[in-house]
Every structure is written in structure tokens, then in C-alpha cells.
Amino acid sequence: MEFRTYHTYIVTNKNHTVLYTGVTSFLKQRIWEHTSKMYPNSFSARYNTYLLIYYEAFLDIGEAIA
Image (tube, rainbow, N blue to C red; front, side, top):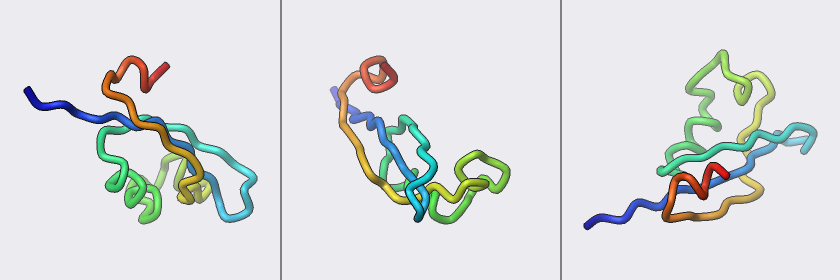
């Protein structure tokens, strides 16, 4: 049985004036997506949130979302 780790994370912009909270199973990739503005019309891209300031790992997706 393979275990997957889920991460709850918070990113901010360079001035630390906006927070974005998310959940992902691929934290490194997701932070790259924020940094590269992969989704240009997203909240994260509009407010330039890409600096990881917090993350926590969970084995259950429900706990990560909660």
C-alpha cells in the first residue's frame, strides 16, 4: 500500500500583505506553479503570492483540508 502525503500551505507576496492558503499532494510542484504564475488569471497570480511561509503534512486529505 502506498501512502500519499498531503500538505496544507500558506504563501504570501513579497510585502507580506496577502495570504493564500492551499492543499496539495505535490508541494514542491505547487510552489513552482505559484512562482511561475502558471495560472495567470488566478488569485495567486494577481496578488503575486509565491513565498512559502508555512506548511504542514498530513496522511489524510480530509485532515489537510480541515
